[in-house]
Image 1 (spheres, helix red, strand yellow):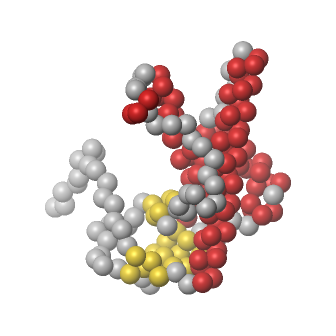
Image 2 (cartoon, one colour):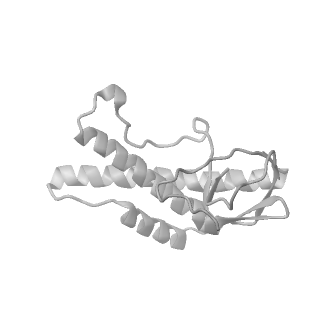
Image 3 (cartoon, helix red, strand yellow):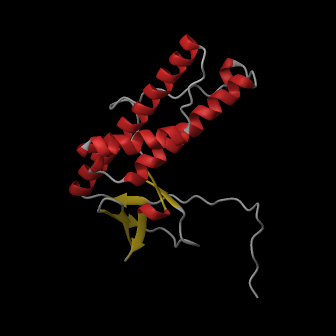
Length: 171
């Protein structure tokens, strides 16, 4: 008989070192550049919607659904964006949505300025740490290596075995 964990069980996070080849590093940097562009476009779209709402008095929605639609349209128009994997790009729009929702909630709850999460800002190339999020459909573990969407293969330095299959990976 196996015991099932309760529904409110927490999530475990494990950190491992990666050995990244030159070609993998180049691919990951290019992917980060595309994801940073998507984030910055989300910031610009959000600001434009806010200014339009203030000037016309009609609320313009720029939620996760509209941002996903914007990403799909941008991928259709731009070959450079299409070269990368859609998984981390979609995660960027979701992360942006969470960040913006948290900032708006803090404003609504009238938290003191020191405790508020600020509105998402533009990420500059040399002033933000690159990180890419991959969901289950964006990576796989095979022969001790991490295979990311877009054909990037990274060697993992395993310090311990994983207790279960991971649900996401952040590189």
